[in-house]
Amino acid sequence: MKILVLNGPNLNMLGRRSVKHYGVLTLIDIKKLLVNLAQELGVKLVFFQSNHEGALVDAIQKYRGKVDGIMINPGA
Image (cartoon, rainbow, N blue to C red; front, side, top):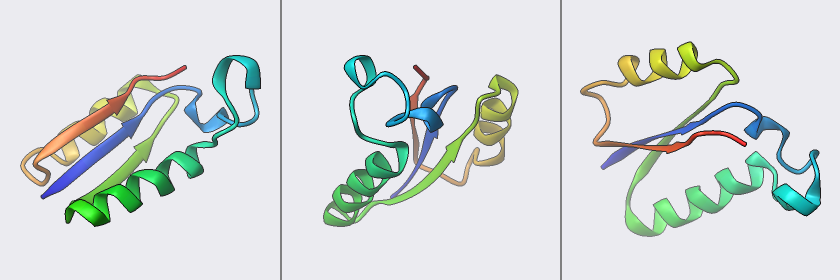
């Protein structure tokens, strides 16, 4: 099974923005956690992040028929 993981606007700033509101984890930290869980479950992940809605739509279209599902973290 292969899952596309889309991360939306401003998520590249996690860990650098207000810790009170967004926590201390960076997007890289979250990716590592997801990769570890995916390996345990035998799932492959493909990651993509953009601050631009059109680029996220392009990624969905690019991976159409190439992944079994999509997980979207819309942005913060």
